[in-house]
Image (cartoon, rainbow, N blue to C red; front, top):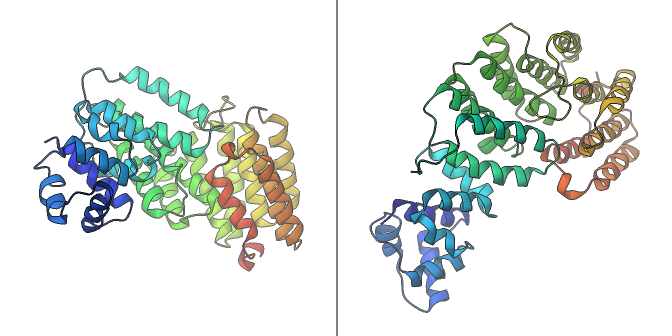
Length: 379
């Protein structure tokens, strides 16, 4: 029996929160035949026996899994790619990836040049596509990539993809996002590339700081990035802004304001020309960082100036970031005491953005706006 079939049955069962006994009961009801918990445990999930076509069909039905996924394991790459592209990918594929790089693939996998080309595409697509779409595509690619990690260059590709994959989960879900950021940092260390090591940690730090999630982890990753190299880079730029947001949310306004000046100087040395990639920080994007930070600090003058600078240069193809700026205005109103109007403005801005363009970060920002104001942030 192919070990992947037994593993998949177990993953699908656990994804539904079922015991082996519950799976046996559901199969009996669906098929009208008898199957025991012990048989599932000792024969199927222990990879001793391949389920027959009869049981494959009923397994697919009760586990909400297309039958071709259970039957396609003769072609491992096709099997895993289809798996990652289905609606179960956010639950099952994430757990499969975390377990390790164990799939056996053929010899026609993409080369390093193609993977780096895909990185460029993902960097641009992330700025406009929804998190769910990016997550499904990344899961399929990462399952293939994990079989090719035989050079530092491929580890560098993996580290950047893993960082992006982490961003498709809410930062508040430490079991997923934080785990992936941690693995991305370890993968970056295997790349032997200082810029990649700094960038992965800095990108994670700004993602968590901007979201207002897992602030101790944001500080840790930012400090690691800044400690690896003092050479100006996008990674250091992200790390500095990540620390600034974390400090502001913790009520350390002095540190947050000091980091604004440091972050601006870093931008002068390492800002980007690419206007529409997640792997870049152009002028408009730095001002998006500053707009939210100033709103959190209650500095209306700085926030408004940053919003104006961002809007002046923001590409029309990226409406999600205009929504960010509108919601920052809502947060400012809330911080200024006009809670009802601030929440209304932010909610209207979010509602005006097509749902498929929404991001987890926007939803977390909405949560911050609607929560009671933390007094320490206003001091």
